[in-house]
Length: 241
Image (cartoon, rainbow, N blue to C red; front, top):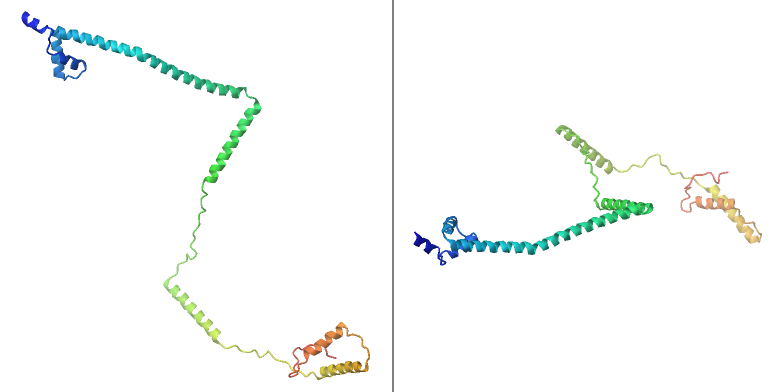
């Protein structure tokens, strides 16, 4: 038994490679249990495991010492930025508190105008809804088959009567008559008047110019006498005695 223990505690342990895998947690459960039972009997593995543990503790202490300053600096920087933000808001609030009343009113009025312009712009950009077109049924009355046939028959009769009346010849009303009357007295008066004018011109007598009434009378006499068939076209009492 003593010889066997001396052989196990020799510096040449065959499971030195398993120590590294054990420390990094790369062994399976069975291998881990086997190596732990081996460490209870192997002083060399225990010494090496203690050395590795002290090295790991030293590395952890060095890491905490080296990175602790960076973490403290980052914490101080974030606190300083928060302090700057807080101080900026406090300075702005203090500025408005210390500003005069007219400046506060101007800022409030500008804010109200900005809100009004924003609302107007949004209302103008919003599409206007189209008015609803009310659809009403004009011919909402329903007709039966007999009523439809009666309407068609009446319409056909009206069209036939209209065509018949349009094809009939126009009749001259018997009340329309043409009056014919001789105008010998007027012709004589006109001849005598023209003879008087001619005789006066031959005798060299100066006659006064015709008045407006005489000119109208002469024009009426000339207009009422027909040179073709002697028909009096207008029946008036202008030249009647």
